[in-house]
Image 1 (cartoon, protein in one colour):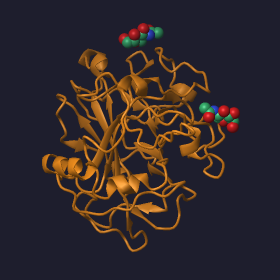
Image 2 (image 1 turned 45 degrees about the vertical axis):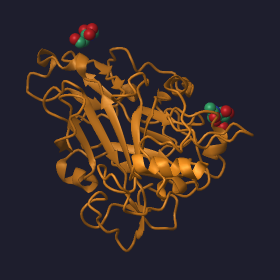
Image 3 (image 1 turned 180 degrees about the vertical axis):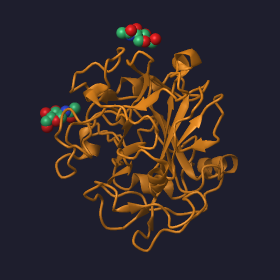
Image 4 (image 1 turned 135 degrees about the vertical axis):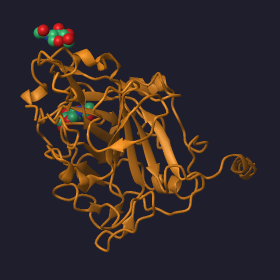
Length: 346
Ligand SMILES: *[C@@H]1O[C@H](CO)[C@@H](O)[C@H](O)[C@H]1NC(C)=O
Ligand SMILES: *[C@@H]1O[C@H](CO)[C@@H](O)[C@H](O)[C@H]1NC(C)=O
């Protein structure tokens, strides 16, 4: 019975090269359990999605993501374990975008969900790709992350184009409308973007095959030696294992800040990351893998679907309800005299 059903679907839905799902905001706070474990507050503000076991410290030796979450803010809940109510509970986070007004105060830029999932509160769109984004049929094999895997992409201290080229796939799209996907730039757009600024975070896709983490959370992974993941670029010998490409899309809803009269009179653009960067070159994102056992591998091995008939999903209302309590307790939403943490703009 089941086989017939799957075969019939197979005719209608080609096996796709990616998993794509929306995630609501689970919290916004000054915590970073990857880079600053145990430190509350961490230096700058983050927006976080995923499982609700997100915490100040998440040492994989003591903090098993899968077992400690009771919900996830993401659409797929494939890994719900009925006996102990565990959810698949990866966590993903990025810095937060602020608008700097002419009078020197800052206002947090809200996030907007994409078309089709409009009622999702804040959050991001998450992709796990085994081929290029627009490939309909799956061609390649990728090796899913192992338990305890974590990584960081980008560098919070970068402030020029040459440095930013080290992470050539962290980009911005100035959205003219919902469908705009190009051009991509590695600096903040210099003109108002009517439908918002999309920040894209593509994580490295080559792994050393041994370490699930490294002291700087980066050395165990690498970008392809040449080209990109999407173009099928080869992995370097030092990092021979091809991982799925994680892409995070965050749409920063700049509508309230697009009046040119409110922009700096020197012609510069008014947006800054919560880390103080006004160029866009310091874009970065963090990932903690939390899929249960080999479930991600199974979904990537030729049974992955954009519309995910094989994956359990939850309603957007349920996603929105999965929040993490504010453990820092600071105001990040008023017109602020300084960025949270008194971070200086540079
Ligand atoms: C966060 O960690 C603290 C200390 O380990 C613990 O008491 C608390 O229950 C954790 N919170 C969540 C939401 O897991
Ligand atoms: C600064 O400018 C913003 C935007 O125009 C305005 O909403 C806010 O009230 C101003 N704050 C002060 C202290 O003037």
